[in-house]
Image (cartoon, rainbow, N blue to C red; front, side, top):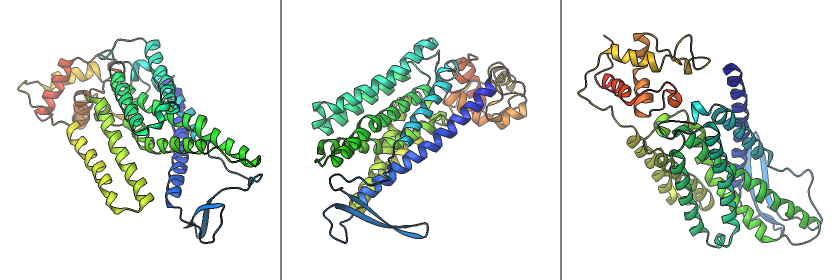
Amino acid sequence: MDNYLDWLNLGLRWLHVVVAVAWIGASFYFNWLLNRLTAPQEPDELVQGELWAIHAGGFFRVQKRSMPPGVIPAPLHWFKWEAYWTWISGFALLVLMYYVQADRYLIDPSVADLSVWQVVAIGLATIFIGTGVYDGLWRSKLANRPRMLSVLCCILLVAVAYGLTLVFSGRGAFMHVGALIGTIMVANVAHVIMPSQRQLISATLAGETPDPALSRSAGLRSLHNNYLTLPVIFVMLSSHYPATFGHSVSWLVLLALFACSVFIRHFFNVRWQRGDRRSLWLLVVGVIGFAALAVLVLPSASRTSTSVSFDQVQAVISKRCVQCHAQQTKLVAKAGKGVMLETPEQIATQASAIYAQSVLSRAMPLGNLTQMTDDERLVISSWYAAGAKID
């Protein structure tokens, strides 16, 4: 069964990455384009701005323009399916990885002893109720005070991130925060941006003046998506870096990385829009923040006076790790990342990874299915601190 799940996982992940790249690429390009438009060289009351570019051996002239009443160019290209398929494939992956295999990736008994149906219910409620709350707030009168509402949304996101770490594994909590943000982004496309564009076309065909409030709302949600893109990309990558989701205050690590991402995104937006080189400080803050966070979340090996033998270490690894890291595995179809821990030499080669995964991040054993104890983690920590010797 695991072999089929692996191939299904691969296919969905491949689709997710391809369509996400298409969506993000189009989003970044149009955001850059809007910030770089200049007044047209040839006066035209219908042209709101234009840009010249060179690419693939040719010159391109791009214009943003209004259309005369009753006129719609054809073919008219829409950008929506990239967003829709990103969410469809991403949600399918969430179900496959975190709901079908909740005991491995979502449930951590040391955090909360919940059943599969309970964690699935919490996950789905977080995603869909959270998206509804966001949309309701930005449709309310509070939207007239965008800065205050933005602060409120950030506070709510902090509460969600912290709350999820109290019921899910660190990895599962990270992924559900990302799933919430991703669902908000695609809901912005489906329920605000696309309806606005349809009404713009209808008004143009009818010879009416489009409601400017629709354009402002669509533009605001598009801007939200622009700033949320880099945090979502981080979440997509985070499962490969247990030092983040396995930290004791992983929710703070997640939010700090989000903040660094937003600073970096804002730098590019300001730089493109104003051409102001003084905005470089935003990029510097984002990069320095990321570097400082890396130092803070990667503590040095603890030095302990406890003396342990390699026989004790090997006993722990044989009991808690070899079920998934051997030629003949018991809990999974094959050894994760091809790592084998059956011989002293193999253990010595993987000493740093064993320490990082089982002690620093506590990400392994996966879902703690083999029930490694704190005392056993201390045995590995003491062995590693003493030089990880096998003789």
